[in-house]
Image 1 (tube, rainbow, N blue to C red):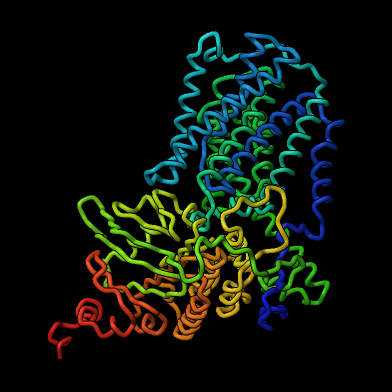
Image 2 (spheres, rainbow, N blue to C red):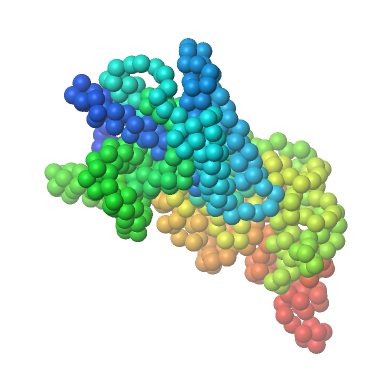
Length: 630
């Protein structure tokens, strides 16, 4: 790995290099966009009317697949809402054109009406699924949208003359254009959709969507308002689907209940899975290909082609879970590298084998970021617990817990398993967890605030098991943390990542630079622990809560972590609350120790007082009363 200035010499600003993953064998974004446009538009003069018509509809369904990929592939929202949204857009055109008129003013009115109705329904479903006070399964949104698909298809099926019933609405007056003009419009629409989607997913906002897909809980504890983000994505993707449906109706002059039903909703998910989730181009290609060959297959093998498509879907999911396009691309890149390797006499082999080394062209800067506003002066009380209680139905996990922690203190909470330590942490970091009592952060009552709002008050939490983003690289995980809950850019990725000095210390001490571009799932357990700690410190919290930060670490790693924590707290800008089972480690670094037993704060004192107390020897060190008195 190349030398990285700054982190080796201890300065506060450092520059490291990370890969440009979107590079296409030397092609820049402009050349890729131009190549895609040529592929879509160039065949126009050579196509007959029938083929053009088939491709126009295929391109429209390609747009539908892209909108679904943004929701499912990038945001982790498994949704069947693409068909209801598409159908609402189509029926808005059909009903207005049939029952009112087709004119210059009715077209935008119908489109706007369909999109608005889709957005209203999407907001309602998003509120039910993402803002639920009770913890619901991630598949709840799938069930909800599937139910909406069934409900809407039944509504249009039994809508009488207004919706056309089972026959739908057809043959209504629409815009008259030559077939080649429709083809060019559809081609440009698909091209624009692909380009805009790629700009979005390669921006900081796209990185946020991938982070939410990987680990929504960690995102909330980094300050991101994930319910709002997921709702916006859900609504936006459905709005695009409604626009595609309106385009379909204007072109085809046919709308039917099948456009809102389960079959279309399922087919869209199949296209996305076949092409490759989270690739944008893959689902678009799969949708276009499947819809382009459907008329031919339905004529030659009408009884079997749907079954063959389903069989292909099963085979791809089992053998190529990433989809067809990513695997084909992987093979193409491997072939290109092999050719380049042969030409260079093997010089490129090392770079291919160590793709996460700090040796590429784009740069990321690590520099001190702006602190969260500190509501009190250094040394003031940061955390105040007032008779806090936590009940799980009839079981009381925490009872009448009261304590204060100030800046510059490293307070450890010790106690046997089941003492209520994690329950206390949950009460501090999530307002919904507390059953009774009151908690204040720097004089501000938590109330029932969600975790992302509590983070903005200056609270950072590290979980017992490393909670990072599996598919994101180490540098990308830190980039997400550096936003401190602020909404990132929709169209670009900033070159600089602002990290505080404390995060840089963790990066340096625990060897994270050696795996800077590696996916976080591929690094060691100790490095994952260090990565999460660096992410939490990137928030620059006034209260840092660590739940067993040394679990699974080697002795040298524990020593380094202990030194880091002691040094960070000694600066007087932060209060640290530590949950730890290693009592020797606790004694070495703590300024104060609180003993929690059977859900009650049983003792609170200095390290010497608690270490020598009979209570600790009895309930924490496991000694009998006789041994404690001897």
